[in-house]
Every structure is written in structure tokens, then in C-alpha cells.
Image (cartoon, rainbow over all chains, first blue to last red; front, side, top):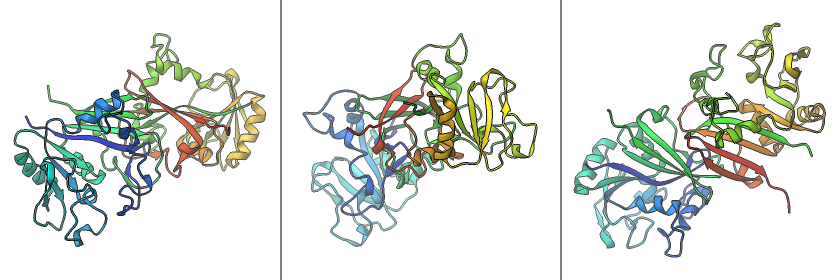
Length: 211
Length: 211
């Protein structure tokens, strides 16, 4: 069975998954790289990194994934839709290596990159986008890649089977919150928390199956 | 040296320390008792409870405390100021056992209860209230007892030395948030997270001392 998964989505103590304002120079706004520092210390990111709990969670990002869905804000800075040459933040070989569906109100022709990533552009609601990505995933799982508003939309629509959040001990104060509109989310999930020696806390949400 | 401390302040994943609306029947609104279930399972609460990490944190609530400061919303439901007979939620022997200062715009005469608790009513800003409580604490520490808006006011004023929060794996969606207006709080504190087998995560903030 093909699952819908979220991995390595980092949030502040106050629940912001990105700061503000987003720009070409600051993809995460005033948060800078602080939300992702934990990941840079892992073997998943760098061969000289740690192999502990942070790494165990981080490396699941790519395992068994056949397609990604991301929001327009993840693909580029405000205005990228007007730049016909924009191909994402990640250079010629993006770290997705699968079909990758970018949700946007301004679709454009698909872009084939090196390393197996092809960007497709979809103007679609979550359920419809998921159907399209699921088909492209060819039996593997679909990752909802973020940002926070897209993750929220998929959670609110009840489409997520597994979510891994990483809570970083900083208070961002402003940005885009992950939790808004998700009251009682725990009713549908088993929630587990495990703190890491690095200072972050990993939260996993596993969808409950009716008995 | 007398410290200013916060203990056992329970919050949801989305940072709410109480639900809504508050009433005589529901002191924590729609949150009910869900934020404090972890504590009811400890030896601190009941002699048959657990003695693990939840208990280790919980029992520090009273150790070395000489006075408490609380907000009007902790002392009673909306409108208690109009009830001359209201003496708090806790019956004749409240669990404070020290001078306890209630911040209110409608001060009234002090009330001496059983077990060492005396309620005093203060119309004062955080720093002034803390001076008064510190004097009453007679060399011991002062606890900021909540609710969340009072805790926020004392944090924002830089008056808190130690804070212990307990993050409960539920999404409340509405209520009173602990984090609002506290951007970059971590600059002044060492923050530690430890998850408990009960499912909650204990967060401790220890004020950094200039080297």
C-alpha cells in the first residue's frame, strides 16, 4: 500500500516552520538556517556526521518515496512564476530524484533535471494532486514536502498517513505556523515524542487504523 | 539568592496553556483536564503514582518556594471579583502553603486560609509585584503560578530565572498561547528537552548567567 508521508519538517517551539519574510536570499526568512541545523550534523547530510537518533529519522526522508508534492513557496521566492528560467533552489541535480509536483496557480511545462527529478506544475486541490502523484510514484510512497501551508492543507483533508516533525528549541515569534486549523489532530494519530541529545525533539504522528 | 521560578506549566503542541472559554465548571475551557493528565499519574499527585521523570519534575513545584504570584484568571472564573465570598478554586486548604499574591485590578482585603496560604490582592506591574512577593518569601524563591498571560508578562519583562514547561501531545487549536510576543526567548536561556514514557516532553529554561 502506498502511503502519504511527511519527513524532517522542522518547527520552532511556537510552531513556525518558516520565518518571514521569504526572499531569494532568505528562503526561511528571519529563521535563517536555525530550523535545520540539527540535520546538518547528521550522516544523512554529511558523511562525517552523527549516526544517532537525528540521523535515523533524517534518512527516512528518501526511503521508499516515489514522488513528492510541494507548495509554490518551497519551489521559489515570491515572483518565481514570472521568471521563465527559474528551476528551483537546488541547482541542476535537486535532492528529490523522483517526479516532483509543484502546486501553483500558474502551471508551466514540466522541467526534467539531472538525477531523476522532474518538476511538474499542477493547479489542483490536495486530493487531486495526491492522485496524480500517487500514479507517478508507481507503487512507492508519496512525500508531502512542504512548506507549512501545504502540509496543513493535506492534514486538514485527512490525507496524511505518517508525519515526522522536528521541534527546535527556539521561539521564532512570526512566520507560518504548522498547527493552525488542526484542533484535535491527535484523535486520528498515535503521537510519539523523543528528545535527542542535540536538543531537538522528534515528533511522529502515525495514523490510527480502525480496529 | 532568591530565584523566580515557573513549574509544571502544561501546554499543548500548539502552545496553548488553557483552552476556552473559561468558566466555573471548566477552569481550562475545552482543554478539560487533558493538559494535566500526566501529573495525575505521578507520586507527587497520588501516593500510588509513578516516581519517574514526570514525578521528578512535578515535585519541584513546592521545593524552596516562599511565595506565589498568580493572575486573576487562575484565582477564579470570570466575574469572581463581584463575589465577595469567593476564596479560590481550592477549598479551605489551598495547595500553596505560602503567601500568594493575586494580580487584579480590583484588590480586596487579604484572606488567610488553612495550611499557610494567605491570599493577597495586588494591582501592580510584574516588577513591583515581584518585589512584594520576594519580600514575603523571606529568602526563599518566588513561583509565578500562571496562567499563561501572567507567565508571558513576567518572561517579557526578563524577570524569570527558571521555567519548566510540559508539552502534551494534543492540538488544542484555541485558548491562550504561552509563546506570543516572546521571539528569541532562547537567547537568554539554556533550553533542555526530555521526553517521558508518558508521552509528554519536559522543557526547562535556565537563565544564562553572563560569563
